[in-house]
Length: 122
Image 1 (cartoon, rainbow, N blue to C red):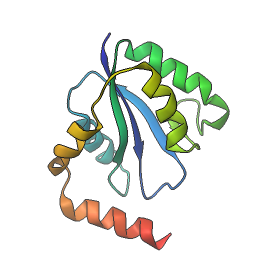
Image 2 (cartoon, rainbow, N blue to C red):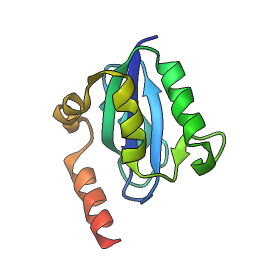
Image 3 (cartoon, rainbow, N blue to C red):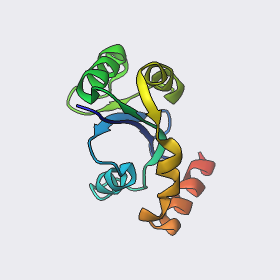
Image 4 (cartoon, one colour):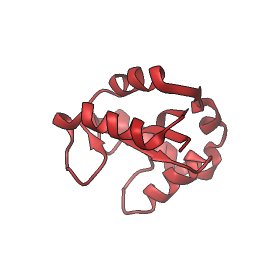
């Protein structure tokens, strides 16, 4: 099934990325859902791409980075985002990261600024 593979980061979790998938066109909506799940600061989309088979691509990424997976039941990895981006670029149909950035108003700007301020402290 065609969908979007995304890489998210969070200033509250430096050095950790979330590699996930969504069939929703709006990655920012997915980010908002994750933020409302008890995470202190909002997620930022590092990269997002439309791919032909989201299940296969996500499985391949999770397998490739399994030694760096923090919890086998979660999609968080202690890797540099560029490692995952390099693989996704080989498989993508379209880079949708710019579209995600255009929809940034879904998450309150004050919360985004708080996240950036927190990241600068670290």
